[in-house]
Image (cartoon, rainbow, N blue to C red):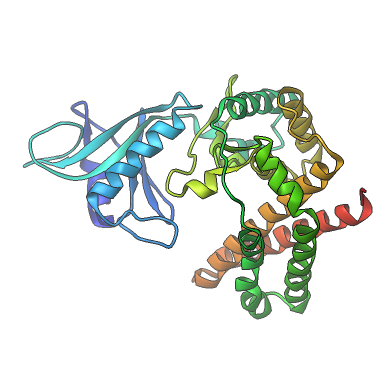
Length: 341
């Protein structure tokens, strides 16, 4: 589908014979139509280095994978629906006409319960974070254990891709951040060399599992029982990771909101259910994982700033990029101050 068709679908589409009366949210890879009762997620017909939605069959396959993977932990995922153009209407579900595309259908959640919005309002309580941590730990405990050969070059490459935004930092920020990027990469190289054997043994110990892959506050609704959604379906290497790397994302995210207390609450509650931090070296690795998560968020924001034409939006992304780089640097200082042997 193209964007004009999506706009028609949003305003004219039917589901169960009723108008969906939708609003559109858009990401780099998907269109999301928010109806009155249901949400419909449609994949853009694109091909990138890490995903391929370029054909109808591939989009259907990825919709089915998204449904299957998210149903492991989320009750809001309902079905995969064909999108059909009939003589008079766009229709979600079975109808006469040509199948134009496919959508993942979900129950609509209350927008104001999304965790990132609640964090901005200082409205997230410790007991909510405890429930979330226990839910994540339970999911991780039951997740498929992944055994695969870990290549040290892949560890270097993931972190060192931060170099790709060094030029952007020089253009839009200042030399302090160019130097910071170089320092972070140098620190990471040394850390990986020193601790790679423990990364490998964590894999042998069963701590690498098929989990969510994108666990941050924007992908969580804080009801009485938290609702987690939108795991990564398109690239299994993003999802088949050390469980501590998954935990590091939500903890780093909380710390980016200056909620270190809630980050500690999450980690303690999680480890009480799934004790996957069993050596002193694991504590250092957890800090490394948080640094890597902040690194990736910095890169995403700086790359987005480069292509943003709106000055205010560009400045917000640049500010976010700087904040994530500062946060990443803080984790390297933790490692120095808490050197363990």
